[in-house]
Length: 205
Ligand code: URA
Image (cartoon, rainbow, N blue to C red):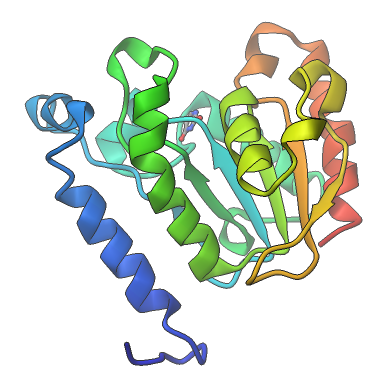
């Protein structure tokens, strides 16, 4: 693999992830994607971001546009980022599942297993210093993947906490579980909780 302007091959890796997801005919969600003229939602933002947000799965707006968090939850994510002077272009935003599950249902374990390797390859390519998980599915996957399974607890107990870990690409990787922004649409008090938790992120970027 040749290296690019960043001195590594991240652009090439990210392109190959996109191509692999586009051709993921083995996914049970592939037929749903094509029947509805949906796009897979790979990820968006800076390829050199220090902060990576990981949500659950694309919703309808996202599948129609191919962009993560572009609907109501995305508007909240933008406000939360603005509260710590960050713009979307400064961060990288993606999901565990790259295709929309039918009727916005929760991701199935086998779907997480199928799509998670693409997420892991994105993390390896972008090499964030901070991963902020959005919601319980990405929290559980990321904490287990980075050796923090013993710290796993309900999101109500560990949101906004900082878990230090390391990986081959980031010797001091920080993982911060957050509520999913959409949760604050139904429970207004969670917006304040999210705003407070973003102040924690601010200390690490
Ligand atoms: N919810 C998610 O988890 N991801 C999106 O991209 C949009 C809504």
